[in-house]
Image (cartoon, rainbow, N blue to C red; front, side, top):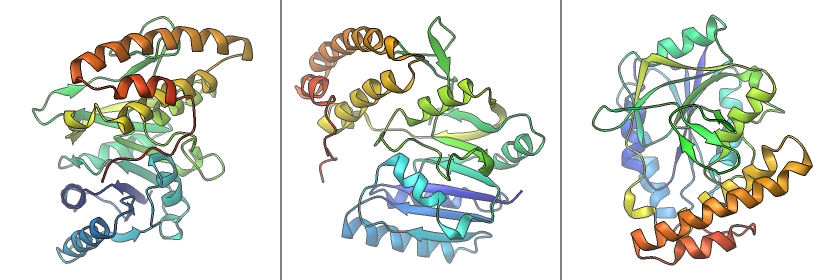
Length: 288
C-alpha cells in the first residue's frame, strides 16, 4: 500500500520542517501539509520551510495546502483527505507537526495494516525524555483520561500519530468537524468500538512528541476548546438520548472541579469563563 502522510501546521514552520525531515527514507509516497496558520507571515515561513525540505533530496511528493484560515484540526485533516494529490494512496498517516518519526517507525505501522491486524494503528509515542505515553482511556461520565481501564471508560489512540486504511473513512472524512481541536480522536475510538472495528498500538514503531507548551494551557483558547470537547462528547458518546442528561450533570461536576483547580494553579479566570462559554459554538482563536 502507498502511504499518504498528512501534517497540519499552525505557525510552527520550524517544527514542521523537522517533522518532514524525519519522514525521509521511511517509505512515504506523498506528504500533504495543511497551512492552518491564517497568518501571511507564518504562511511565508512555512512555504520557505517546505522549499528547504524539497531541496534536501526527499523521496516523497510534497504538497502544501493553503486554505487561508485556521480550519481547526478535524476540518484540516478532512480537507487533506479530499485533496486529489493523495487519492491514490490506500494508507493514510496523520502526524502532528511537533512530532518526529524515529528511524524505521513507519514500516511496522504499514505492515500491521497490511496483514489486517487492525483497521487503525498507532505507534508508541514518547516524550522528549523517551518516556512512553500509555494508551489513554476516556471516561464518558466524568471526562477524565486515565492510563488504564475503568468502568465507564473506553480506549482510543492519540491523534498525534495514526495510520489507517482509506476504507475506514466515512463519506471521505475521518473526524467529526464539530470539534475544532481536542476530542475528535476520542470520538473516533468510541465510533470504532461501537462499529466493532479494531485499532491497535504497535510498540516497535516509535514517534517522539514534544507536545504543547504549558504556557498555553491557561489561555481562553485552550480552556474553551478543551471544555467544549468534553461537552460535545456527552452528546456524541451517549447510547440513548435518555443518557445525555446524566452525562451532562456528571461531567459538569467534574469540569467545575477542574476549573477551580486550574484557576488557582494558573492564576487565571480563563477556566471559569470557558466552563460557561463552552456551551456555545463560539469562534475563539489563539492570540496572535
